[in-house]
Image 1 (cartoon, rainbow, N blue to C red):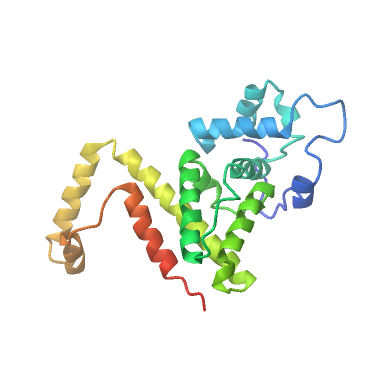
Image 2 (tube, rainbow, N blue to C red):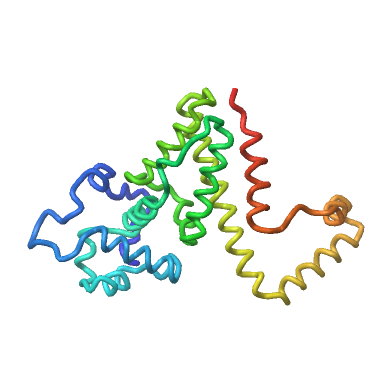
Length: 238
């Protein structure tokens, strides 16, 4: 995508992006909407990954001229912000809360994981700073309500939500990578042989002991739950 922006570029003003009109202010009545353009970009990312999202491809999806799209999304960062918030609208914001903030936080993490698995490009899109739009803020608000019984101050609650989201994004990225390599049994076998050789060389006794111990369930859901429990149960609410 062109118009990548440069280091130090402040980008689009969040007030203009999220609270202003979603239509160009000048010229004839637009034939397209920011919503339609964003949805087309999301569909491309879902099907082919973030690298496939170019202004030219998005324009072709909606039947627009490439240059006309810059009135809606002047650069890549703006479009990514729009895409992230667009799909965040799928996250439920009225799901019931139990009052047990740890249980509710784990439920929120499971919603995030399912959401990111539906949109495998999301973990990468979330690695850089994003300006939260209305859908993202609605889900954040729900998470802050869930954390209210913990008795934490506002800054701590925001930090915990950021930590949880980063964990989920990192884990989903790992899951996606593992799923891709699982289609190559020869590679998996080669990796197993390598680790067995390393464990047997006498230079890595701790690793050898760890590899010889029985592991936990390897099913993706069980693995995620085990890691999530370690994270959330270890959070300090003091």
